[in-house]
Image (cartoon, rainbow, N blue to C red; front, side, top):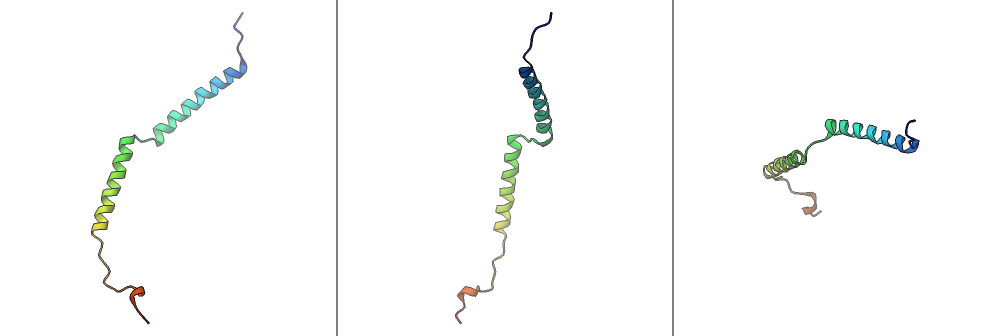
Length: 68
């Protein structure tokens, strides 16, 4: 005779295995390593700093400085 199994536990185990497969597939599709994310963030900051350093200052006076 075969062993008696708890159907609730078996259902949860199967769901857990299926969820693990889906999670693994999502990690492969959407995941990036922490180092890659950090490198991308640093590169964006470097580019922004470079652009901020090259902005031209406006020679036109602002509206607030004019007295009517």
